[in-house]
Length: 497
Image (cartoon, rainbow, N blue to C red):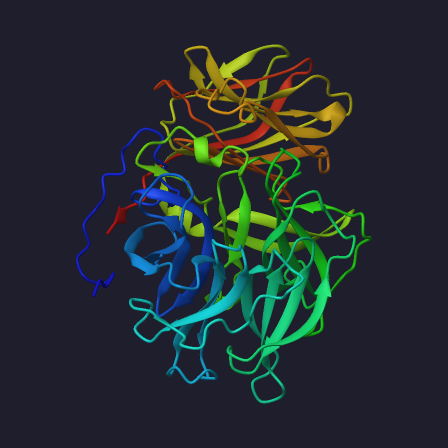
């Protein structure tokens, strides 16, 4: 038995493009995060995994654990394909009250069995009574059989709803082609259909997948809303797959959106954020999420070697009131501040119009925060160029007149592996009280950009070919006034097995 509390073998993780702060598999293919649950001091991360190749294949559940969301220990594959099919996405909970009878505080996962012969999808169960180290599939699988009228029927997200002593029950959110179905159960085994949500709401150009549903306070106060996440397989703002969300209420049977049907709220405007899932049972009511940092348009072709596919940084979610209504705010988990090296900071300085300012070297992995003061007549585009040199760079900028924020990776390095990769991705962004705030994290092959306190986010992969590490600020037709600028080199995380 492999236990993360025994001595583990460190992994070098120094291949070209291998992220230093983002989770990747030791070898093979990775896509959706699955079964995120916190138990006995460990964050568990399961994920869609094909260990025998670097392209999608018969899906397994890979498995890793962490005590701090930064450093990860890989454990043996948790679930493997069987006679019922491949092991598609799902979720995990701790059965605190032993409702299923598997044992006190059993870790229980619900997942989709996908039959590769006829593409039927059904929901099945497995459990562990040794902190997730070994797994037993339920003998009566599937617990929800394949409906005759649905082809897409997958990705169960489960959570406890209500009071244990007054009608509480398990709830499952399940994705179909363009709707989310809800089921309820007293014991995780016997499920009854509830309501549904979809019917013309949100973005519908691609199949809906990997739902999540949770409740959050608004502005950290007594008022609350429910948040429903739904992946969209195609037609996201940057092209291909992306993540949308809805704000509303949940009555234990179905979700009701508080916005109009044609309101589309994007979780991330970059190309590389999909299949977002949250951890269950995190202490102190924190809502932590993780996403697949890739895109189905080109995910099988990105230029990595022994491994293919990475996760975003774990993010903490909040709800905030904005002029447009209640919206999600995202920030990298504060645990990552422990990776900061010596800071570099400046305040109240100006880059003249049309000029650039070269910053001190920051290495390959770093964090930047800046606040830019904007005059009412600000013109042109301003921003940063990252990983500059050898006729390549990644540009991050704002165009105040158009109220847009963008990441431009058209000259970022290797990009010819797929026609859809080299592109400029943009998001709507307006100044707040005459100021724009940006925070970004750069790893060896990714940029995660959080604007205006995380209410606008863009995530993009990049694959620079050189070792140039310079960063520069550039001003457009108006001088660039920086009220605050902070930068940190970031230490690599530790990965072991």
